[in-house]
Image 1: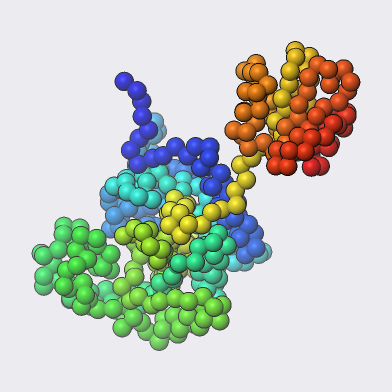
Image 2: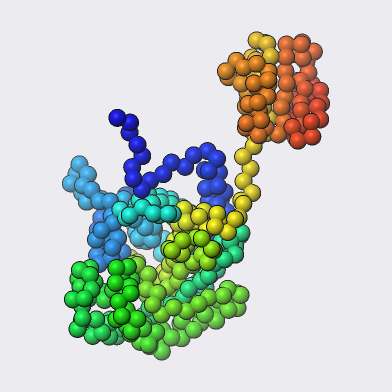
Length: 421
């Protein structure tokens, strides 16, 4: 019996992986421009980290985490999202004491959730995310949203929209929570078991239920924006004002609550409006988490961030017909005829690589015609042809595959000539 890839995972093969490398390089570049520094955290963490930060009433903690005990009987979990791990690292490494504040970090790496695989959603998936910790300035909220929008635009996406909401401060959320309980409690038995369990623990999560989203009580549920106190409303207004100044259009949606318990004030999602993208349109989302650092054992520090799926980004690019400028060709393929020429070809290929060019040669003892076909298959820009006769004369023929032009070059200058071309 053959061993196959686990359900919900994928092999990213040559020909496709170059797209991943390109969008990841672009993510690193835009973070450089916005002054965010990369952080790399372990793929697994103590399970308690995610229960405390993500929330034990969320689908992630209740149903989707890959958790296990190690040989020391410790409860560990493959990270289902990036924020909790980054904040844990921020606290553990006392980044709050650094002179440069706020602390601005980004990450790119695999996450793991046990959910039903579907288009653009896998059980192992890659997230690009940022976290800005240490400032409660609404301008940081606007900056985080702007970075995500600028990143999508830089890759060529145009059919995207920003959806914005505010969950308010703890006082606003408490008032809204009580209103939600009063709204749903008389008919809670009509909802799924998860919603019934969440009524007293976290009724806001009911609004995010996928099973009961068409229930009539969902449409008439009290809106969080009705319960924003003056301070929370002022904060929300300032974020909107700054986005307008940045020419970043957005829509307000009072039903947007996001799927994690740690959010306060600003929450947002960026969606694709490309035709044929699919029923699930969300590309990325995030928000402010002013109590999370303290919950994980650090000082009282505000924070905000977002995360996006690389898989769904690539689907959006495909839906909009965007072709990324990915170069996959080889700089030079060395064709050799004769035993001595083949030996020298190994030396020349090595010199080309040391000089910074991508180079390849034949390793299957193929005839000259087959070697030229091999050069075509790897899309070689130049082909250097060397036989024993050319070796005796100390020269090599270099062919430009785009123009067909051939130039005889001294062997001693071949690597420098090809690299310069």
